[in-house]
Image (cartoon, rainbow, N blue to C red):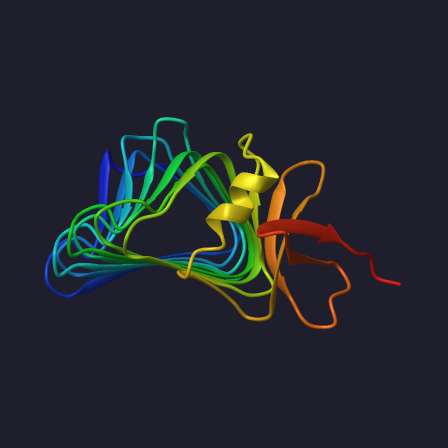
Length: 231
């Protein structure tokens, strides 16, 4: 089905939700989940395509937007960024399925906004991951893969919780650059931090001790990625 030019869930005080299931397809130009009210977009199966100027979760101050992916796909075109909170509070929770963003994922854009990305599975791929905005940003990477094919930035209010999921830098970043990035105090690992070059990108994850897949070792004052393999 095709939707209107601008589609709002939670446009005013109160709430509204859209659940996509049964392998359906929704094609929308612009989508705001949580304008001044509470909005929910839940994709259990099927596909949502947004190809206009914006996809926003948590647009206005006081608005709350939740996007939950339990399967299926959420896609945007190369001209459509996903603003995970603009002035409000926006959350993207991925349990399964794929999110493919032809443009950037912008998290907590304006001062006072809150953006939360929670990954328990599935795959999110973005042209850039921009956590370096003026609001408060949180990444909770419990599972799945979060991939940037371009840039990555963090801000003064960014916190990254890294569990068994994988954050993959595939935008030309060097191993040394990523090692330096994740050594900051705002990067919190469940177990031992692991940063390594997979051959198709720089992978950041957390592994239990004893390490069997790889680890970061402190050697000569530098962070050195060491690869190990499961026996």
